Length: 113
Length: 111
Image 1 (cartoon, rainbow over the protein chains, first blue to last red):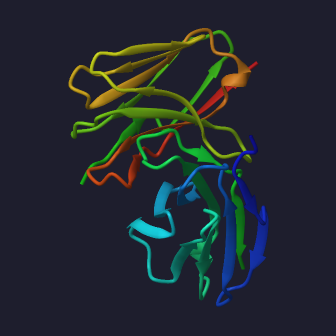
Image 2: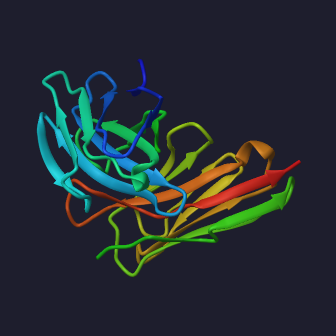
């Protein structure tokens, strides 16, 4: 069974631009969660989607948004990029609840200049 | 607000030594998960502990869930360079749709 894939793996943007990251979950998984990981802040929860519905959202500004498609693939978008948005963005998929094993992708490393 | 505090934040030891890392909270968790993240990769689940007092072993790794389900520990016996990584604990928050994450323990095992 193929694992979670994320594209692109690396991205360099400048302040003010916007970016879209993609995540393809494991086949059959309907829950996709997004996290931001930085050395100083650890793993910060962005949002979680299940069957195209956002079920929960972390404490991030509205510049961070996401969506999930009918095939469970998910995208997250960051508008008006700031230097502090530089981070590793991870997505994780599971069958349905967060008590289950979260299967993570390798992440997208975003650098904002 | 539910929090998970991990200690130590960083640990560097020689191959063959034993070590213990901790995941503590003032809140009760229904379960706790331990993940290991290697550089350039996403976290990978090591174990889930569910019952207070539970002990689970994974080769040289021993995981324990506190009796009150507020804390957990990971003990590694005879550490090897392959154990190097970031160890994260996580537990379900009061909302079913959010996992609470510790900040992690960065472990380096020197040959």
